[in-house]
Image 1 (cartoon, rainbow, N blue to C red):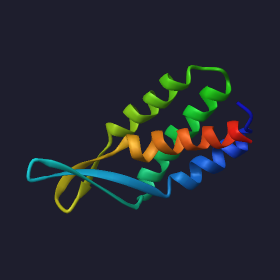
Image 2 (tube, one colour):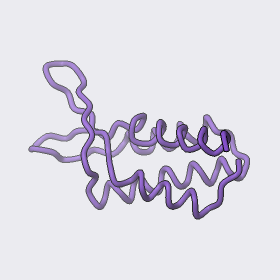
Image 3 (cartoon, rainbow, N blue to C red):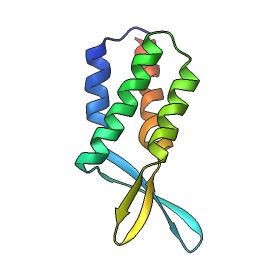
Length: 106
């Protein structure tokens, strides 16, 4: 993969500004995107940056992205008196895959 650590860090920092939250309403999951809190930003930034560094160093892409997703999925977020979860697929996996596609296309 041809990207620098700084590019990976900057991308992770930018992506950490938003989060997709999954909640349950009437037995169905509902996803919505919003601005992330400071603690969510740190979690998301670390997960994305770590996955990108692992991939850059030759680790298995699928395993690195899945680990980042599962790590973020574990985070419970208090919201309006309920505990909801971060949707790791939309918050972490899709952005990482988009970044990697962009970098391999260039």
